[in-house]
Length: 111
Image 1 (cartoon, rainbow, N blue to C red):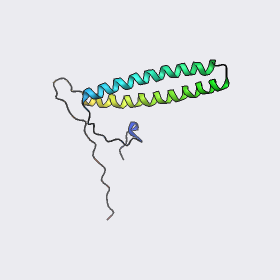
Image 2 (cartoon, rainbow, N blue to C red):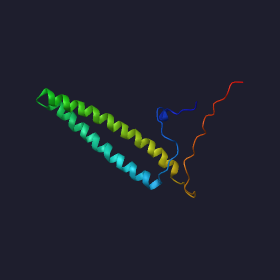
Image 3 (cartoon, one colour):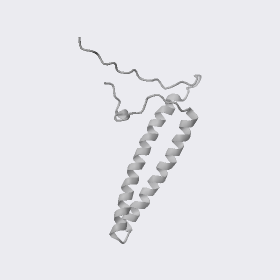
């Protein structure tokens, strides 16, 4: 099997049906969400450490952890989109190309 480290566990098809402009717009939107979640994580962490009641501290710290993991997921998704955008971006003097699909593994039958 020929698996790269960044594709382990992902069941998405390798072909991309979106245009380059759509991918760039979606990447920008994901970056904005990730930035907002990072700011939320900082705010919830501050609340978690400074709140007077135990319940507020607990909710603040749990919210911070959830926000950090969500931000990490969005950053990972944006990184994958960046690779696709780079593959679709034409080099100087080239036309737009599609992302190549890797060959499918054909199982062999025992003789």
